[in-house]
Image (cartoon, rainbow, N blue to C red; front, side, top):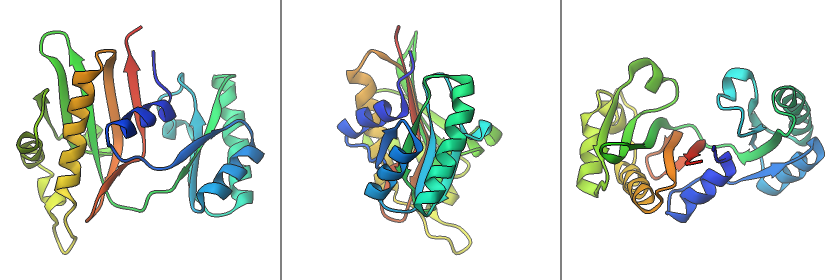
Length: 213
């Protein structure tokens, strides 16, 4: 069984993993009210346990800066999403500032138990498969070593005039992900992609969790 994005993020927040503010909505008007509460810019996307790759299906609208934009995006996304899943709803979230995208994930291996993954995020994880793995529990020195092992580590440290990211904040997310997986045996897989890392801090903007049936 798949957790909804909002459910997954609520679980992450309980373990001290920072997530962007977001709410569900059932209509374009409700989405507009949610956006008014959050403040602009916002993201609108489909909320459905049956739809995994929302961006690929055109079910995500980024950087919306006014109420009319929220309503238009919501109507478009709801119509398309409900043609796939009649129970689909909406998520309205705070738009994260641009940063360096990484992935933090975890999987419950039948032989080794919970394992934790780190790598460059967004499309890069699929293209380059530049990741490192550890068997939980993962402690801070191990988390920092995981980051050093990927080929994209210079990007995290800062290259060609770009400032590096907050490695300690990323280490916290890795360690807390390990702790979550050790505590909750009902989670089979956990995927946070992207986690947006900044010079100071990092935030999870998309997450999914697969539970035991």
